[in-house]
Image (cartoon, rainbow, N blue to C red):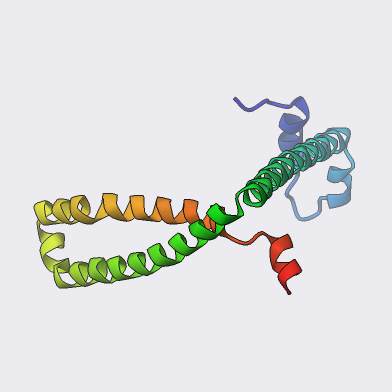
Length: 154
């Protein structure tokens, strides 16, 4: 629930919009200055929280990258196998996507008109595509090159 500031209610009650009103006088009132300070303090706190969040995320990302690097170092053969399997599954995925898109293109009108055909299409292709994508991601992640490996190879 939003907090009602006493300064904000007085700010909106004291605002004069007549043509001969002095704009500088309105902004120098104690209520406006207090409200602006509260806004600034709130933004400062938001910035601090965002910096903490970025720090937490980067720490956990660094830790995961370090653990993955250690795993690859401990299992170089398996990492190479994962890389080869990911390449092979990438080709399988490309062919599967060709079939899915051809089917969608050929039956687009019927699927738009009938819910049964659309559900049949999703049941036939959806789970396989999702599982294939998940496997490919895991294998690519485990078999991929880390930035230190690619720079050492150069």
